[in-house]
Image (cartoon, rainbow over all chains, first blue to last red; front, side):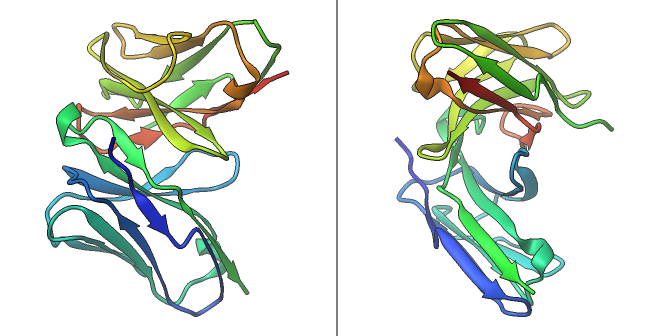
Length: 113
Length: 112
């Protein structure tokens, strides 16, 4: 069974601070996706990373896929209250043609004004 | 382009009943996956359908089943409901197998 460990589980910071969320596994994934989820809604896809060592930027968010495709990080620069939400990483299972996602436990981010 | 839609959004059932949830994928998407989200277990994979065939199944009892129609719409069924089945059931669609998955808003099921 593939597992994804996400840390930290909770993060409360002030507006303008930077933060990093980590997603680690002992398994290799064919790709890794990051989602953000608001209460009572489904997860919204932020980015998909496929290549080991890949770095993608989405405005103030920077996503990195580890060289061995076992870990990933999400860095937010100058966080804003609108960034508040549950951040989830999800690895695509190579053995199931990438169709089965294994999710981390999530990081609940609160950005205080 | 419309996103993934799920109906109903909220459902209350009692133990022993059965329930059917519906999912309409993004137009053109052919793969549909279902997930269960609970506070204790997080998001867990239920099953995946592609071309009307179940391609993958998660570690859930046989009470959980599903199907996909020729227009890619999917339904999941839970029979003999238990209290522990209370959860947010999420459907996700992707263009093809292994591509990025886009989630619907979910169906909140409460079993009393």
